[in-house]
Length: 176
Image (cartoon, rainbow, N blue to C red; front, side, top):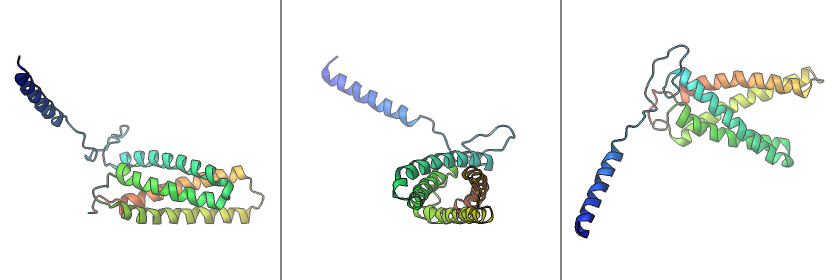
């Protein structure tokens, strides 16, 4: 085989390889799925799949919240709390936009941050008010009981946030 023939074969092989690579099937993550009780296809856009992804995203953003809060506690707990809420909310809104609700083609990043952040602020206000009310009405409440009540309340607020994000911020009817 001559060097020029080798180059032609080599180019032909590369062309075939490229053709093969372009024919690799892709997964349509936004494909609508039918809800089957007991079986959740987490790739689809049914509410159960979205709720599953929403919960995982929430868990990941809580890990980020914890890390930021612990790192900044020396600057004061309120400063640490605000910084942790801001960082985890920005991350969660982006993950919800891209992963939980498959809305990156419909909802701009800034829109998701403003509207999702507004929903998060409402939740923060509700939880802060509940904590203050509990501390005023039961001054001797233990930190553990207060934490458990806050976690339960956060679950309820998370459910409300899911409904608001799914129905308003990342609604499938929304266009970019």
